[in-house]
Length: 336
Image (cartoon, one colour):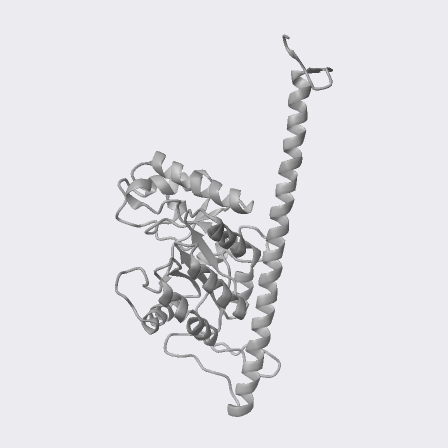
């Protein structure tokens, strides 16, 4: 048959024509996938904007009530929180010792001048920005957390591991459908395995990335190292794995606030909340580490009170995006 082959109708078709048809087919499929991802990101942005508007309305109502009863709005507390805007015209009444936005936050926000950064907007209005993040799901606790977040119209970030089965697939999809950020936390969560070599890390990374994409159609772009980027359990220096993510254009996030729910201390809900608030009070932008595996029911139980406490601090809770401040124990830019 040489370079020719017969199709069903018996007509000649060159290999070039056959490959051309396949290329056109693949191009159409890729275009459909890209449109789906763009549409999904638009829905996430729209949901986030709605939540911010709702938060501002609630905050203004609370300020009006406080002003009518005491004639003034809350003052700076001992942790260094700035004054809430006072006056019926909404003008700022901020002290000169207002904690400035970090250079890291400014650099992150300015990476794309055309990007709409909710973080930058909230910081400019004197709000703290908090990213609630959950590791080790999906599980039945993830569904409970999603229900609570839904009640508050708050979006969060879930760094997930590899789980198979329809009950888990529905959770992966629900995270995205409800406007949250879906990230990677390795497939196996086996420290000894994934940190044994770069090849082992590469295999595990590709497995979780492809798993999420096959289940949801979404290709994740954020990662959290099991144990963090500064963990001391890796078999080889963590710089090797950081360089791997850098080379693959994957952003990783550590944390600067933690519930302490994975430290084996069997903490109470009150202890977890205090751990988080203590860290959040220290900075403008906080990435909070929590866990949503089956064993972390107390984390779920304390979540409503935590959210109420963060709202009382004037914090806005957002999902991680490309314009979020990078919180990294070992900075990616330091690894070449």
